[in-house]
Length: 360
Image (cartoon, rainbow, N blue to C red; front, side, top):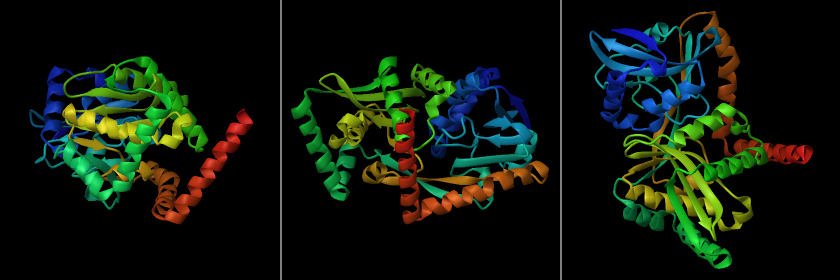
């Protein structure tokens, strides 16, 4: 077994076809963040992206997309943005994680959303739930599940949707629209949300804005950007931008106009999106790791993702451990404790309000 390294744009039709075939052969890899189109698009904007092509004799048995940072630190493609990470490889292939990262010229590979069944998971890593909306039994069955298990939320959301329309006008739902202007409206809402809650504004980075715009324009049977928006009286109210394979829609950037907050527009939009997604062939909506109230209300299942690192012995790995691991463990402790999590979230929101006042 040997590894060759390539820039994403250097992969030819044979490699891309093999990548898609491997991905489609394993349900745990059915996520658009693991699709070649995602890696290629990020690679057009970031020169740190590489792909390790794994060979067993003459056969390609796997692909490992990653970013190479100074000191040989490896990260997932678009680290900090992606909710599914890891290798795309044949089920029966044996891959030694340390040999792989050595072949990639890495001292360390760190991850926080590694999907299940990965060779990287032979170590002791933290596991986290990743909530999903499971539509494999159809949208009607999911609706029945909501009535039985989240009835108050379901009924109140429908009531608020009716009130929204009575108060403001005709409801319109655009699923999988390709227009750029509503995307920019959505990103503006998201920026306001980041600032309001004290989080870092991802869209302050121009490459991320361009990435999302390019992904919106990418459409094929097995991969596409999906922009979903709801309107009332032709006013945009709430929306979501995510990515899809043929059967999985990955949640990514949901947001809404805070002027309509009393109507719970985010829940209205998600319920509408779920129905249209199911009609288009989507069987799983992966909402991604992270505790959010709307996820708890809508989920009817969970996947599992892992957080940790694979490291070779050496000075670079030691420096990386000191800089990252204690902070990661502290963060995990806070998130796992409801009281600490609530306190930290409140502090961030207070910071966001103060920042908004200072800026203006």
